[in-house]
Length: 281
Image 1 (cartoon, helix red, strand yellow):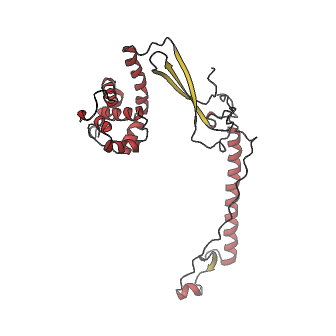
Image 2 (cartoon, rainbow, N blue to C red; image 1 turned 45 degrees about the vertical axis):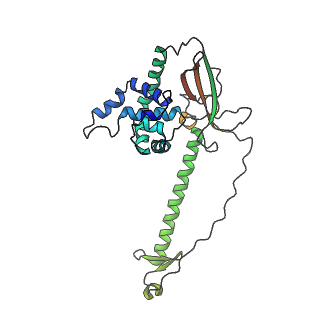
Image 3 (spheres, rainbow, N blue to C red; image 1 turned 60 degrees about the horizontal axis):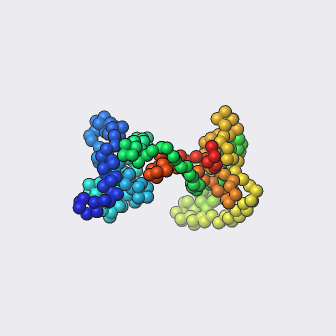
């Protein structure tokens, strides 16, 4: 199969790098498995993931598809074809170990003279976050909302109790009732005795509420500054995303993704996703 690709193909480079990585943290888990060995070779799975990420394929489903259609993927997997769930579970099960491979790659680059660390360059880009900017709220707002929901639940239960008591008074406490067409009928009614099927009840369509207009002056309660660890009024979990009020798009919820690059060989030596908008710090 290796004759199907050019000698300088990226797949061979990724395969050679993966063969030199220390995967003991991953393989140790399967060595302690009493039910048998790993369903697929862990090093082969690492090669598939690394090659997919290098060419911009991050979806486990797309990787599984490429393992049938793409020659380079088939070479990396030695013609194996794990399904997308196997690929996804492998990544989730070994997320910490896979993250540690980044350091090993940097060490290999350093040994090859590709990382000098004399002059580095930092740059960042804003990436849209998978979250609603209208539903982000502070810890204080969460507590207030919790009280509102509790009141609504109490009102619902109170109303249900009143309805039960009213029906017990009307039909008797020990008599079961039939419901048809949204109307409570006493047991043994004529319709039930005759065996006629009840006409299917169709609920009225509820009118759709108009969405309120979003006002320009409404901004998120999450600010650019990091929440204080000791502040009881704002939780870091409630403000994990960048709500930076930049000059172009003031209310876009997003992350600030940074990369530090070695100036001479353009090797990425550090990455970070943060909720701080500015890179000055």
